[in-house]
Image (cartoon, rainbow, N blue to C red):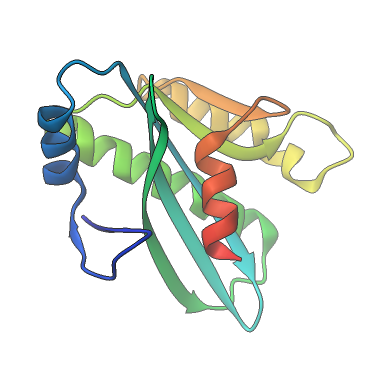
Amino acid sequence: MQFKKLTSEKPFDVADYVHDYYALHPDEKLSLYLGCDSQNRLRTTYATTLVFNVSKTGCHVIYRKEVMPLIADMWTRLWGEAERSVETALYLREKGIEIDTIDLDYNVNPKFKSNKLVTAVVGYVESLGFKARIKPDLLPAVYAADHIVG
């Protein structure tokens, strides 16, 4: 699964990168946060991010961006965000890397349209053994994805 750094266009395998990052920072307490955001303009763009929260120095972000034909149906587009996060988390787990949290860009507040997916998406993520977080919690991976997709 190919990701990129914010500072480079050169793609790399996300699992290899995570293993290398851990090897370069053996004494750091690292937490991994995974998330995805999407945006519709003339096309649909998804950005999946993996945020390394480094205890002493802040955060480091890597990402995967996908552009595809417009997905007009809100449910389908938003479900696609969860699918991309879960796909990445499962890939990393298969490579021996556990994700601390999957950040989901859905809101518990019923006034937001994404609220309609909260129960289904949280159930999906947690049934696979991952911790799910949704708004209004602080979601570093979703906020990073929002900046990349924009």
